[in-house]
Length: 133
Image 1 (cartoon, one colour):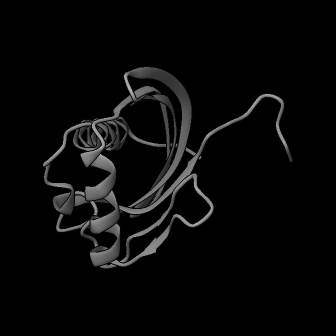
Image 2 (cartoon, rainbow, N blue to C red; image 1 turned 30 degrees about the horizontal axis):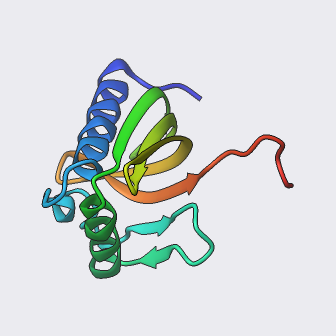
């Protein structure tokens, strides 16, 4: 699989914008997760959200927590009007004044809408050591 430089840069910019929005209470996550085809599988057991209304509501809730989402690595592939990415990073979680830096890996699937790349799927995971599966 290959990806052109423009697509790689556009997907990376979208991911960075997304992580900034997810780190900012009150941000416009609706502009990010508003595709009619959006589906999200978070890292929690019950975190399955299909469609823009539910996905935006979930992302709004998550962004309100004030956690800090950071990308450390973004690897992108493309086939036609679909691209996907492996996004490795962390989430700084603060609860009761205690910071916890949690590894968080996202699989993103993106499609073209009106000449822009949009999220179609977010698959999140919190890798564990040792792995349970």
